[in-house]
Amino acid sequence: MTSESLRWLKPLTSLKLTIFCLACAMVLVFIGTLDQVHIGVYEAENRYFKSLFLFFTLPGTHVRVPWFPGGYIVGTLLLVNLLVAHIARFKLRWKKAGILLLHSGLILLLVGQLFADIFIDMESQMRLDQGQTKNYSESLYHDELAITDTTGADADQVISVPESQLYRGNRIELPVDSLEVVIQEYYPNAALVSPSQLPAPSYPHLPIGPMAVAVQMEKTYKENERNQPAATVSILQHGNLIGSWSLAAGFPRPLSFQAAGKTCQIALRPKRFYKPFAIQLLQFRHDRYAGTDIAKNFSSRIKLTDPARHEDRESLIFMNNPLRYRGYTFFQAGFDNNDTTTVLQVAQNPSWLVPYISCALIVLGMLLQFGMHLVSFVKRRVIA
Amino acid sequence: MALAMVSCNNDKIEVYKIPKDGINVAIQSESEGLAPPPGNPAQWTKPDGWSEQPLSEMRLGSFKVDGSNSASADVSVIAFPGEAGGLISNINRWRGQLQLAPLDEDQLAQRTQRTEVDNVPTYLVDFQTAENAPKPSRILGAVFQSADRTWFVKMTGPPELLERQHQNFLDFVKSFRFSSPAVIEPPAPAAPIKPKSTNDE
Image (cartoon, rainbow over all chains, first blue to last red):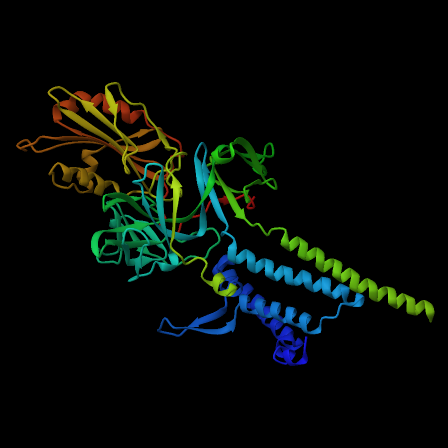
């Protein structure tokens, strides 16, 4: 590389930048770990590590001001710094082989994580009662406003509006049938209570059914709780109102309406991830050691059906023995309802091997680098 | 570019197709939600002569009872979590359907018969429209307060038909068997608890 082209790259190759990025990463890990106590692992991960910046909100306003680089900025700067430093100072020498290997491992680790974040489905769970069959898993953290056109003979068409677009006053154009959704009211977390439990009839609430109203609650970040949003939405077609409904994720009963001769259903529910196959829970077992309540084994005997691949077989999922199928991994994660419901964690990660390869490269690089130093040191001592 | 993709990969409206009921895709069931779980947590025995009707979004059980002269009665089984608004407000709601005045706590105690079915506290009521009502109607009702929800069994129809079906209704009510333990807990209006993790034990 010519010295002319190197000049503008020089700040990016600087070791000072590396130190700065590592210092920022330490600060992020430190405050992220402290804040995790209040906001839980998932939210801390998103706020500090899976973000471009850390923000604070100006008091009394909705203005968010960035004040510190987030994990994506720090990680990308480190990656660029490492790559550019190698390009600028690249010399293919046997003595540098260890460092080269070690750094390739690091680069692979950073790129692999970025790739996983961009292209991979979020982790989700499949909750099955004994005998129940499902072809979808549900997000643990995110909800959706789902509008399903059930008119088709063979298939239903689902329009899924992500929760990031659900806020009061938002007008959302749907990509079909000139439909529009207007969010009249939105509670990110709500509790369902009976109307008689309201402190006063005028207390802000959304009527969910004849016997339930939704009242707004603080968002929860607890590990064992989930936010249950509620909303009042209106659907318009060509600007004309079709109807308004109050919906609650805690009462996921789809409501029907007609739009241009089509029968549709609307529901606020945990975000669903449909699979091209179905799983039925045949039996969940929670074995205990004889005479005690100490868990010995959790297992789910399931039936996997995939007409496209002519699969129709049983499988047993238990601790450390997940079901791997079509790129998805189903782990035994939980249970409920007096051991009659199983909860399977569903992960999809085509780059799951990358961290292993990266670590192997890093270890190999270190062995090579330190090994060569050791050999030359021993040689010098022998000569002396 | 990649960073921009990362920042907004969860913000798009998606449109997709799903196969129609080729498999039995159930409505999701958070156990704390108002919707009853797909596996019905109560079992009952239908009396002879009652014909089953299609279930709706609210009804866990629905029956039609035919009488003479094309008269018929309707029987519904509905469940809601917790106390479902309280016994008195629900009983008064039924009375309102018969244009009867609401009862207070003392009157309610006099007009309801308290018993137990499968160790679950049960309240039986029998109301009829006023004598001079243009369209006489009667309600036989039962309210079960099981551990996690309140069950409403209601038979509505002409008074004479309900008189003949009274024993059938009582037999139906007594046939209920609940799968959850009969301990009444106060409803908790908190965020629902996730299922137990296998790492907890």
